[in-house]
Image (cartoon, rainbow, N blue to C red; front, side, top):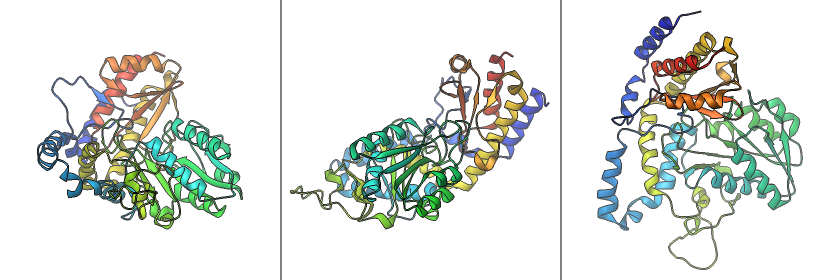
Length: 409
């Protein structure tokens, strides 16, 4: 077993060889920050260092000088133009299919309701038992509204949904299947292309939750043939707390799948303000209310860095980070009653790993007190979320070393 000195030397060597190492200095680290190791980038990303300047310029120039004229200057187009950038940088989506708006919960509701309405006569929604709570709750609500049936697939919390499970579950009554591309608890990376193909063979539509994928692993929505997708922007995309979500609607559904929250911004002519709702053509029809313009600024700063780095390079470093975290856990933790609750195979793993032990809720509090910030997920899991643009290998080493000191055999 490598000793601690060997592993620290390896961490320094990995940082030195990291082609993305320059990005770490482009995130904001305020004076007096007490963080030793930030291992929660899969819940909330760090702010970009350029963000304060961007915000100041926007407030003093675009907002302060242009005032309401900013809407017609460019703001009205931001939900789609920012969506196009996001689609290009992180989602594998051609222009005109991604919109930035709402929260993930609201966007999920809108697109799931549109999907089931587009499959009249089919009464079944297929989902899995370990999907993120919002996904399950929203679909439960839609089933109650529309008198539909939920068909649950039992998934292993240490893994995730498989194509074989989906094939056994879907059928002629399936309207919609909804899964996470990367499982929020385990980090399991689903075979989205195969699952989408399987669902389509049954005549069902597919909605992917990309909250733990976007900005961390390559996503190819167009290539998969996905119908719909949603996701948040405050994790690996560094959009900040409460930043707006995104929704994807494949172009083949434009004009046929209609979302249920009819607001003025989704109207064909929003400033006519006349009677009757007539949805805008294309992806703009997914909009409802006024776009959260100020809240998009951190996302734009994050996209600047992601586009510069490239998602393939981000994925390559992500795999090295999780492999190193697994090496540390195997060397220091697994002989002390700690168990791995994530896939060992790199091709089936997203950007985080989860380890579990009965006392990890209490240990998480102690780690936070030491400036080591992972994420706890009930009942007994610590998630180690590693954001490739902002996380160093030495940081991973120091965080796991602190956990090792607290874990007594």
